[in-house]
Image (cartoon, rainbow, N blue to C red):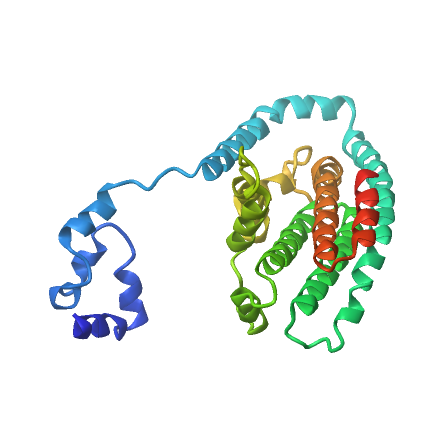
Amino acid sequence: MVSDRRNVEQRPLKSYACAHSGRGAFNRLPHSRYNGIMSRRSRRRIYETPPPADPIREELRALTKARIRQLIAQKEQIKECLALDPDLPLRQRELDRRALLTQILEMQGLIHAVTPYVQRLRPLVPEITEPTLHAACYLLLCQALQSFQAILLLAAEGFHYQMSELLRGIREALDLVVLFLCEEQQSPNLKKWFDGEIISNQLGREALDQFINEVRTDPLPVKERKAGIYGALSKFNHMSYAALIDSIDVFERDFDTRRVAGFYRANMGTLPSTKGEIRAMIVTMKQLYLSLGDNTAAKELDIIFTSL
């Protein structure tokens, strides 16, 4: 069996990829190289048993199909609207832009309020390259803070898609802080992170789920909800059609070069979601300060949180 496995591993990449390209692909492997890797019964079970349905993925597929149907159904109605009011798209864009500016000013104030609590961590990191828990938390929170600032710059110009891409990075940064706090300084994942490895976001979701539910008699579906949000944000980073379809200008029936849709979606969805991530950052920092024994800072963060 050992020699057979070595033969498979030493095959050219092209042949190895072909062997995984579809139903019956393993049948194309020479039997001398296949023997001992997988029984025919196991192979048949893989092909005949459908994988369990992913409710989040199915919901996203349903939403995408509904969005396409809506775009098609609105075509004639929008034509009629434009015939009566050709300036409607630009007027709507200006209304959304002004509403965005109000939200941006509010969030600039929130970011200004939480910035000192990130800066206050710097004395805990004498050397910025130290592979410590405090250094990791400080760097991740600084990155999240700067991403929030970038999101507000993008929001002012209606770049809702790019805002969403940054939101996933913020969520990953905060989930890493939670994971490292739960595992503390001896965390194997902290060491891997400092070694340059990518830490799965699933580990952070599971750590928060355990932290919240360990004293509850009625557990909350924390990791499931976070997985749903993370999956939706990942659509933007992976250039999914489900995300890109929202960059269509329904008036022009073209890509949203005028950012009419961009201002609308930033105003109605992406920037409110950003506010939710600011709340998450405040909660994360509160837990960090509690772990440091700084109850005063934790209470001050509570005050900021309740003002949202």
